[in-house]
Image (tube, rainbow, N blue to C red):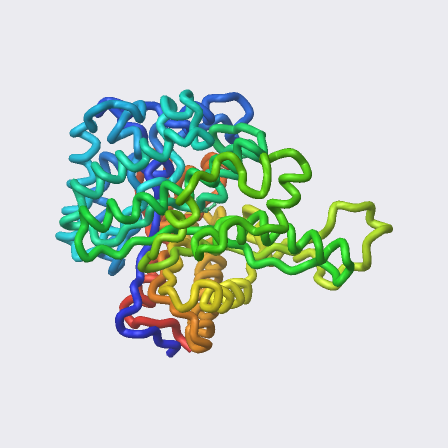
Length: 454
Ligand code: IFM
């Protein structure tokens, strides 16, 4: 038996837009994903989160299932436009707050600790129309959301995550355009990333004031990467990738500001005004480096970085392209050693700050078999191998304190629509039936035993 420490936290995660369904009747406003999903060509099959898993109405059943599985903690997010439908109302919407009240109380009654994420990408469309995250006013709007939600739930919720994956919200949303709101401007993306990190820093003291004794942190999605060959061009491409994906978000949190190598490139290319970009105001760097209680990490796979140069200018690969049979259905390599490497790196880069894996999981289509059960052995093997990597990293001093599987249930997978299933619980989108897969039953045993079998 590979045993985890007694106090290790075992949970599962979801997010509002991906599971709740809109439930417009209770006044939720439009968010950027409602608009994006309705824009032709942005989401596979043209689908959206209007119904999703209908969790808004079916949460009692979902909480009962979590209890049956023995989850100790459940990470969910707040749909911002349920609280402020356009983002600028002077008063919050009671129906939205009441929903999260009910969910929180239901979890506590079931003996499950609620972990709340304040922003998992459903920005009110009204705020996007006023400039979105590149506009500094959005920071103030987020702080109003933080104040209202942490005041309302702060007596019962003692674990808070300000933002989920600012890389996605900032870079996919404003630089590559793959996510809502779908803009493609490097300057906008840099301002957006800055305001996301700044709003994290400024939200932390608000949460602490409203939720005495709470643990507060932020969740980053990080990708440990290697160059595809030792050639100079691949080495440089790898360094740039690490700055673009990882260091741009890690360094400001530990008081280092933005990575100079990439910032210099942005200055050269005219994307920012200088090494002190216009969007950085006095005190911002200090605010972003606010002391936190933990760092949340979402890990799925590693990167193998190849320079974009003609093939003949590059050296032969020493790290081969992974074959399809070690990739999940979404095309991401199964590489548990990457999680080990990442945890060991963070042990040093964050100087022993406690770490929670706030997401880790795999997309596999595996459907119910003739016996009516979903035998998702590949997901089970993925989770098992990643838990072993966690355990090894902890033995080497990584301060890992808990693990949340992504996801409790199949859900709306952003630009992939409903084509990718990450859940440990199967959702039949026609009937809304919930069906725990083999991985859910297995995870339940892992929690009960506090470890994985040798
Ligand atoms: O579904 C997403 C989640 O919303 C954020 N992290 C990655 C998951 C899988 O892509």
